[in-house]
Image (cartoon, rainbow, N blue to C red; front, side, top):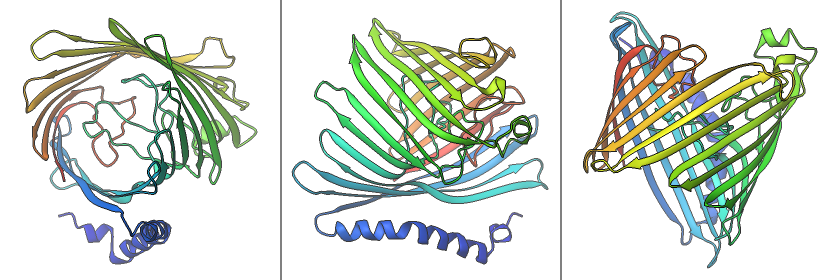
Length: 397
């Protein structure tokens, strides 16, 4: 029988609690002190539990629970300026079950969001642990730079990044983003080498209306670390290297929705095949006049590393399709299919969702390779390798 206290004794729980307290309570107290008069304080949360079955391993191969409590504070500072803040935790306990006698448990509690924001009708500045994402693609996102949202994950969970994000919105819907990140040492997005500890990352984006849609230009700079990849470090004369990312994306309506998203990554490294990376996605979607409306979507994705910017190199190519159909007020059915054109492998996920007020029930079936090459982002949840199913129950309050 699994005992939480066996793996996380009182001393460890106390140390974890004090670490969270010392790191974040000062910000919450200061913010609460300044917003005593006229503030709005709300609490909400999301609880979820799941069972995953993989007949190739065991009928029930994983079980878990998760709770994300959230506190949200807001207050008008004037007729045009507002202040708000969010604090939430991601806590979960999961167990991989190979048989009824052998368990592999994991449990964690960590900050999920912790940010403070000042905003007006045309400007906002948000500081702290937050989600930053942008771009036009859906299934395969070259601009997945700071998150790891998996479109197959019903909860769309992703860790945040620590930093400051500012945005200004012009009257014609053009908007400018500027950001600075600090001490985000975990892998983000497509990264294979983490950012250097205690280092600053910075970048920006401009997004503007163009023809029947909008387009954006994006840039980001960071200092990366090879230390966690010993095989790559042995090929280089230096541990750290500068990395610059440049991207263009756009989305337009021309009877159907079409979009493009592409990025170029340059690395100041003495490993030839790592010097440049090119990624791009071309996609389209359309809602068919079938029943309640069948939305179909397709994307083609290519990623390639090379010694020179426009030289051919080693890479991967994927073709993806998705379909979404609302059966009625309570039920929705969706499916996502990926084809790895390089390895000739197929990924398929089908999801039936039923909603009851605050409750949502998901029934998923997945048919994937035994070794999954795509990102698995349900941390503490399932890695949907092989063939199997998942039942998930979600309560929002």
